[in-house]
Amino acid sequence: IDEETWREKGIFAFYPDQISSVSVKFARSPDSSFTFSLSGSNQISLADSKGNNIADYDTLKAKRYLTYFSNLQYETLKNDIRRSLLDSVLAIGPVHVIELKDREGKTHSMKTFAKPVDDPNQVDAVTGKHVSEDIERMYALINQDKDVALIQYFAFGKIFHGVSYFKKGKK
Image (cartoon, rainbow, N blue to C red; front, side):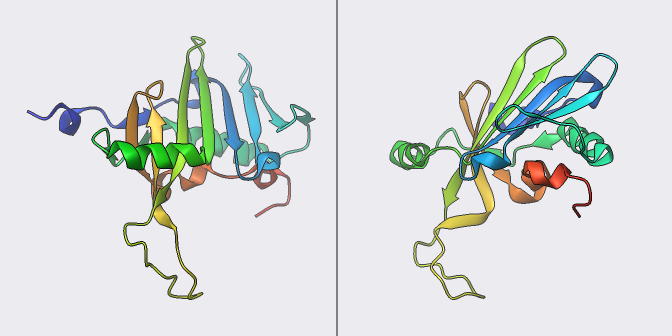
C-alpha cells in the first residue's frame, strides 16, 4: 500500500475560530504582504508588510478570506521529485510564504515555488511570448518543509490576494 495515496491531503484545515494569525508574504512584491491577527473576542486586525495597522479595511472580505483556510488541499505529493530539479526550484526562492498560527500557538507554514513548465518551448497562445512557469500549478513545501507537494492555483489562488484587496472599495 502506498502511504502517500491514502494520506490526508489537507495543508490548512482551520476554521476562523481556531486561527490566531495568518501572515502572507509575497517575495516578488513585498509591499503586498500582510498579517491578520484575531483576538479572543473574534476581533480581526490587519497589518501591512511593515507591521503598520490598517484601521479602515473591508471586514467582510477579511472574514471570508479567513474561511478559505478551512479546507486547502494539495493535489499530490512530489517527494520523489528529481533532486536537481528540486534544488533549482528552491534556489530561485519562494513566491509566497504563508504562516498560520493556531489558537494553541502552533505555526503551520507553506512556502510556494514556481513550477517550471513541462515543455521548455511552450509559448503563450495569446501573447506569443515564451512561458517559463506553469500557470496552473506550483510546488509547495509543507509539514515543516519535509514534504514537497503540487498545488493548484485553482484551489489556492484565493489566498494569494495582496493587502490592497482588503482596502474598502476594491472589487
